[in-house]
Every structure is written in structure tokens, then in C-alpha cells.
Image (cartoon, rainbow, N blue to C red; front, side, top):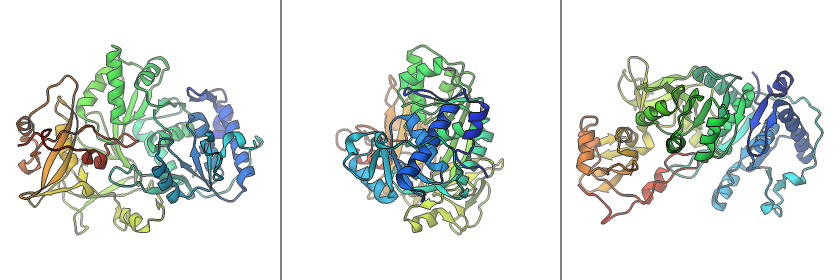
Length: 484
């Protein structure tokens, strides 16, 4: 089994002048990237000794971040990316969980803290490659869950889990060393980080950038990028920008979207703006890696290669086709576990398979449909409603950009199903009765929202998902409500 970063020397020898990383900070060929990574490896060993370490990375510049990340993991240590936008509370929470031995930074803000080492203060190592022996089951990465329903949990991943993820990613999305890939966004987020490390492992060319819609739109038009990886909110903003520029894009061949549901309405728009692109949408989780995906307007997902999926009832028995239950998977791509949370880890890695509490069903054709997350379930009048199922219907209306469905305590229903909506620009806001009429042929009556509540704004996690907790807590009452 290969290890993360193990192909770097081969790429340096076979294609030394090929651009590995293109960024605003500067470009790196595979030859210059390899030299930089090896130098960093020896620098780290000079700094801390040869025993395995967990190294925090508080680095904004993407090329520097990636070369340091690769250096850390190629010597068998663990890298812990730190988001520069974290608040002090979020930073303290992450460090209390992850407990890094050293934090590397290029900011002098922390120069008085002995845990921090600035890149300028590092004594540079030589560029002599050495051999490091460690298992593919060695943990190499410390990440954090999105925290959309509570405080983020820290987790670890092994080399093997990502290497096997790389293989199914390439097979499902038809990617190779010939691709030119962009996944805009901070590399401290796992979606962008995974895409970046995979591109380098593959020997492809990687564009790295913060997500600024105009900047990314211009790069797509001028740089020959053929593969875009991001979340639905990025794609929507990017398409709005291209529409405002009165442009379409013929060079993009792959659009790979994750992080939240991608509506068919948005896919229709993407098919017009990117006429030569294949549209992929996939579902995964920090704990499970890749679970399932679909191509174009397909109704349901299909499991990724090597993933075996089961739908179990409350008694842990497999249900019939088209019958709802909890999704469990067997997969070689799972996380190692939550840090210092054995009980929570055991809730995911069970004897029946791995699960994060998704509820869904599988039809006769093997397509999988996710109904919702068990922890988000609303119990109204003794019946179960999963907000994600209702949101998926609401979001198909041409006047609705995005919706969020949640419960309100109610003396009659116990919990009442309500919704808040972001409306498409220049489209009319619907009344509650219009919402009900739209939903009545698509949802059972008890699932249809009984109230629309205006929100001052929608909140999102740093990875682009709706932050349910923060958004719902921002709701207002009184004259702003539209009652039944």
C-alpha cells in the first residue's frame, strides 16, 4: 500500500518541469515542490527530533501549507490544520482536543508563545532524501467535524484510509494525472485539502485559491482548468458571476459537488453555463469518507466502489427495498476515531457497520435515497419528519434559493414543522398557502410546513454547509412571522 506523498519523488523524476501547484503566492513545479518538501522534512527533524509528533499548521499561503503538510506526513507524523479564521474560543477548543506538540505559523502574532514556531525562525535542513519506515495504518491527519449541530469533534485518519479513498475518487470521477483541478477554499477544510493532496499524489496540476467568485470565474476562463471541486453555495456564486459577465465556460469537464444537497434547479443552470462538464454530486462524511455519488440528474445515489451499504431497522434487521431505515456501511475508507471520545467513536464504528445516523432507503435498482439525519428528526403528532426531505422538495421551487426546516414546540402537535426560506433574487416571495399547494402532491400532509418564519440571515459553517443551530437560534418572532 502506498503512503500519502509517496509518489512525489516519482513525479519529480518523470515530469520535473510540470506545474504541480499554481497559486497567487507563486507556482511550484514537481521538481521544486519535491525539493521544498524534503528540505522541510529535515528541518522538522532538526527542530523536534525523530519521535512521532503532531504538528499544528497555521499557514495561510497555500503552497507553503501544502509543502509543509506533505513533509509532516511523509516522515510518519500527524498534521493538524488550524483555521486562521477561528475565534480564540474555537482555537482553544481545537488545541485542547488535538494537543499539538508544535504549531508552525508565518504570523508573528504568536511569537511569545513557546508552542508556536514561525517559519522564519526555522533552521533550514538540507535537501537530502532519507527513508522513513511506518505502516499505512499510521494516523497522519487530525481534522475537526463541521460543528453544525454542536461543538466540533476532533478525529484522525490513517494513510490507508485516504489512499483507498483516492482510488475510488479516481474511478468514480474519471480523474487522472492529465487533469487540471481547482478546489477553491482554505486548505484547513477537508474538502479542499483532500482534493489538493489527491491531485499531487496523482501527478495532476492543482490550482489553489481562496474562493472569491470573480477571481475564480476569471481563472476558469483563462487557465484551462478542467475540473472544479466545491460545495453548492460556491457553484451558485460562481454561476451568478459568470451570468453577470455574460459568459459560459467550455473548458470545464468535471464539476464535483459535495457538502450539501445540490438541487436539480442549480444543476440545470450549471449544464447551460458549463455545457461540456459532467456533473457529479457525492455524499460523504468526515467519519466515513466517500459513501455514494450520482451523475447528472439521477434520482438516487449509487455506493462508491468498495462501499457496501445496508439499511437496518430499529432491531438491526435489514429492511425491504423502498423501506426506510438507518444506513450502515462497510468500507475500507473509515476514520480511526474521535480523539478522546471512545463512546462517540463506538456509536459510529459499530458491529453492524459504520453510521452517522442517516435515514434512507434503497430501491430495486440499488439507488440510495437519504431522507434525513436521525439527530435532526422532528416528531409531530407522533409521526417522524426529517427536515432534509422537506428541504429537498422546497428547494426545487424556482422562487426558492435555499430553505431550512425545523421544529417549534407546540401544545397540540408536540413539535410543529416550520420553515425559513432564502428567496431567489428578483423572484416573488410565496405565501404559506402557496408553499402548501406546492408541497401537497410531493409530501404527506404532516410533513408540510405549517408556518414560515423570517430569519435575519442564514448562517453557514466554514465548509459551506448551513449551520442549523446558529441559523435557527437567529429566528425572530412577532410581526415578522407569517402565520397559518
